[in-house]
Image (cartoon, rainbow over all chains, first blue to last red; front, side, top):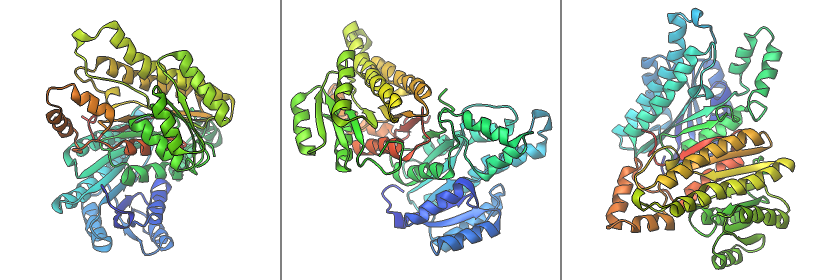
Length: 252
Length: 254
C-alpha cells in the first residue's frame, strides 16, 4: 500500500473468525481501514462484523475452494472497493502420525494452509495488477516454516510451502505489490487449545509448551496481529521477507 | 517504560552506536523526538556534541571508538550510569567500503571485523549482561542484506554481517526471556556510507542507478524506514527474540 493512508486501506482478512485473524481485523478497523472478514463460519464473522461496525463486512468463504475464493473476492470488492491488502491467516492444524495421514487428511491441510493462501493471493493480486494499483499481502507461516516436528508432516509441508509461495510472488509482483510472510511461534488460540486437547494430559501439554520457547510463554494473538499489521501497512521497504515472531524457538 | 512494554520510546533510556550518521543518526532523532533519553556513541566528538545540543535535555554524547573492546565497554558503563540504566541498545555503527581481495591486507580485514562485529558484540555484551541482572531490556543489531548473500568486493563486510546474525541468535538464547536480542537486515540505504561506497566506482551515478535497478522495489531505503523496523522490534514485538528481520526491498528473497 505503498504510501496509502489508513482510510484507503481495503483489506481481506482470512481466518477472521478467531485467533490472529480476528485480532488483525480489529486492529485494521481501528486504524481506519475497511475490512472484508473471510471465514467458513458465517455466524462468527457476521457477529464480528456487527461488533466492528460499518467498516467491516462478513464474506463467508472456504479458502481451500478456488471458485469460492474468486466469488468472495468479487463480493468483497463490490462491498468495500478495490482490495489493496490481504492477510492470509486462515489455517488448520491436524497433528497425525505419518501412518495416519491418508490422502484426505493430507489434502485437507495442504488445501487450507497452502492452497488456501495461494487462491486469495491470486484473486487479490490479479485485480490489483489489472488496475495497475499498489497493494500489500501478508501470509502467515509458522515456526514450522523453518523446522520439522513429529506428527506435523502435512502442516510443516504446508507452512514451508507458504514461504516459497511468498518469495516467488514477491519477486513476480514487485515493485507495486509487496508480499511478506510472518512466522509465529506458539500462539494462545483456539487452534492451539484444540491441539492440546489431543494430548493424553492437555494441562501438562500446555505447561510443556509454555516452557519450550526461550521467552517461556505463548504468544498472545494480539502480538502476532500487531506484527501482521506492521508488515502489511508500515514496512514499506519489506518484500519477500520471512519475519519470525516466535519467542526464539527458531533461533536455537 | 521498559522496552518490553508497548508504550513506545517515551521515557526509555536508549544507547545508539553510529549515532553521528545514517541509521544511527535517524534513530537518535526519532527516539529523542519521542521523549527518550539517548546516549550517542560514535567516534567523532564534535558531531556528537552538536547532535546532543540539537536533541536537548536527556541527550548524552559518548565519543567512543568501539573497535576497542575496553572503550566499547566503558561507553556502555558511562551511559548506564548517567541515564540510570538502559532499556534499549541500537547497534548501528558499521563500516564497509568496496575492496578487491588483492588489496585486502590484514589491517583492512581486521578494521571491518573490529567495528562491525567486535564493536557490536562488546556493546551488546556489557549492556545485555547489565539488563539481564537488572530489569530486562532489548537489543537491536543492524545486520545487512549481506548477512545472507555474498557480494563481490565485500568479503570482510559480509563476514562481519553474517556473524552479527549468529551473535544475535546466541545472545537471544542466553539472555531470554528478560532481554530480547534481534537484528534488522536492511538492503541498500540512502546514507553517507552509501555515497562513500558509490564514490569508489569510476561512475558513481551509473553505479547508483544499477544498484537501484537490482532492488525489486526499485529504490533505496531511507534511514528512517530502518529506524521504524528497529522501533517495531524494540517496542511493538514483545514476542520477538533471536529474530532476523529482512528489510531489503526484496534483494535477498531469490
